[in-house]
Image (cartoon, rainbow, N blue to C red; front, side):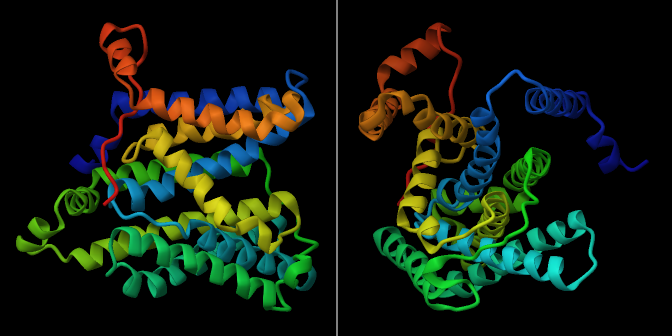
Length: 328
């Protein structure tokens, strides 16, 4: 057995595997049993989708340090590509449902990645506010084109998408996403991307092709946004352009910032909290969104306050993910 293969079978990895299996068994018990309401069960898939979106955007915004507001655009491209394929596969081929859905996920991810290359090459020459504005415009252009095309159903939406998404698919893809992206950021390429975030000029001076690595991070993030889009479409069975407006991009960015830029674990926690929070406030009726906004402000202030630091230092509060990078 090679040294590389031996390094995989460590005690740490075995514990992680056992934790993954234990969490899955808990989720399965909740979903198959009567421990939770039907409404709560329906939230597990959106939580998983938001985790994939937040972790993938963290590659661009947190680890690369570039502010992208077009993540909803890549999600839309993946969602419509995957949905159109699964509809075609169901009506015109004899593919088994799991295989058709798996191919739809791959196609959705690849289509989003292709657009990531097309958009990333010119857009990543920009920095800071300019990059944010252009990526925001990209997301709106994608939405406008979807709204215009007949094959996507236009403003009426794309109906009849097979409902393949369930908690098993979502959980599997969340785990795959976290494992792949966690290993990526720890790899040589991931460390190079973090060095570009810290000082792009210094990185370029030692021979690093900054543009290539920026595009790599952008494309990887776009791919997983497309995968999340396919899950989203197959969960709702209908897609509308309004699902992917700039509010969606802002929502994902808020999750990333709240969880801590450059922290995958923080993105996962923030995605769970911010997906559940509006549901817990549903009893407040008309004041729900107001309370949601206030809760966001309070959490953000606490997250960057000295009070939190003191609580963590004293051991009264578990160490939460910290803001490791500042968007330029």
